[in-house]
Image (cartoon, rainbow, N blue to C red; front, top):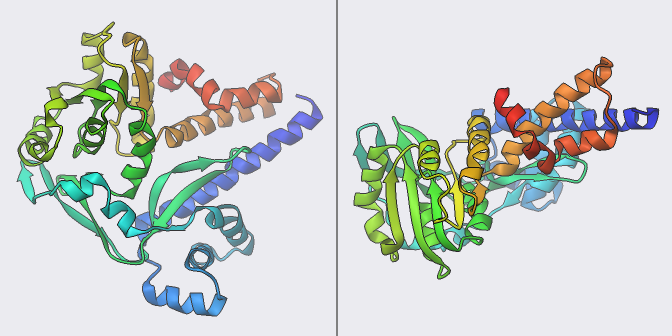
Length: 340
């Protein structure tokens, strides 16, 4: 690399460090004290700062997460000003699934159906990260000003999947692409299948789910409420085995893959399915929270490359490096990611 390229490399390393700083701070906040901000606090800081609720929330949160003035400035200016959003509960309560599907409190072995709630001003990730041109990654934090309840499926009392703003927002762009015969890998509470089956352009929805108890809970308590349940077929199978067994199938025009709880456990599963896409040559694949998953891969690739460049073990141009961490470049390195 030239001296100018090495300077750009260090700037990108600074972006990486900022992303990790924000990710660590947000993870700590959401995992340890998501109810840190309350109605009373919002009233107090809003009056003191004369700010709207989103700006007041951003300023308070940045100051609550660090004592370091420089870190506070980075969190508030580079991330929280762009990420924190007050959501309208009615926008989600009017969602077709929320309006038409009633979830009973039921249990079958280790799985159960029920509800959880967000408290007023409780923070949560409401959609996938936003990646800016310089690769600064903005976590999208939302909150409601009122209590908001949402249906949940639990495994051994722990949330496995819930139909909350995050799921609605992250599935919406994929649902809008669905046409013809659709395959959905992962059942959950059937939100994606419900929304896809409601589309006139969708002829059928095949759901591939490996856990028979999840299937039984769904078939008994949720599926009968689907207006277009005649479009739904459920296949009990491991997702990867299903693809291999049905290789060269031309049945499905689209497939949606949702086999993970979050990006952390999603990367290896994402890579496995990407490696099998060629088995369904006529099918267009979509992946839940793909941007977050690609982010994990991006910084793994960059970290390895950065170390080798600094040690003089890798000779690449800055342009080549940028391609390697682009979404297109990452997908071209799927085999290497699987090996790691």
